[in-house]
Length: 116
Image (tube, rainbow, N blue to C red; front, side, top):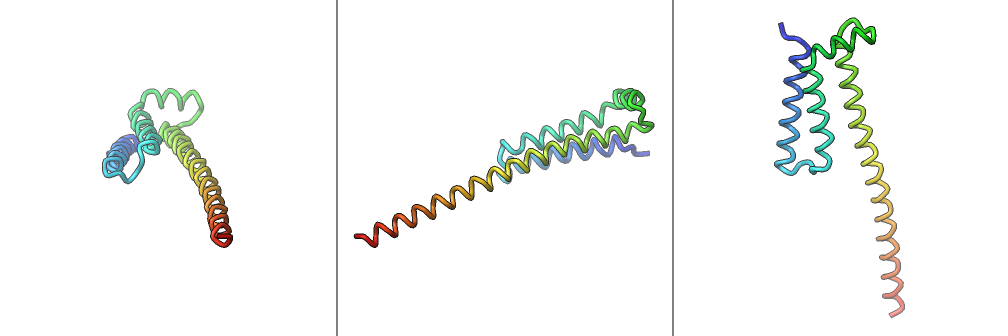
């Protein structure tokens, strides 16, 4: 019988391979891939740490260690998504600033051409 831990191990290895392939083909920048590689590695480590999860689940009061594993995975990926939300927000702000600067330069060039 296939366990959740085995499925998550396979999924983490697939995620690692997909990210590495995307880096190799330059579909994703290296600085952004670090979060995904870290998340895949965390997923792999968590899916292979059955005894630790059993002990932690018993200590917390969760009856099934798989639920603790899924909760930890959710926390890891929420961290990755939060990081990328901040990056997208920063890029949007930079884009707005750049657009404003280009508009000012175009205005100044047009004004200079009209005076000449």
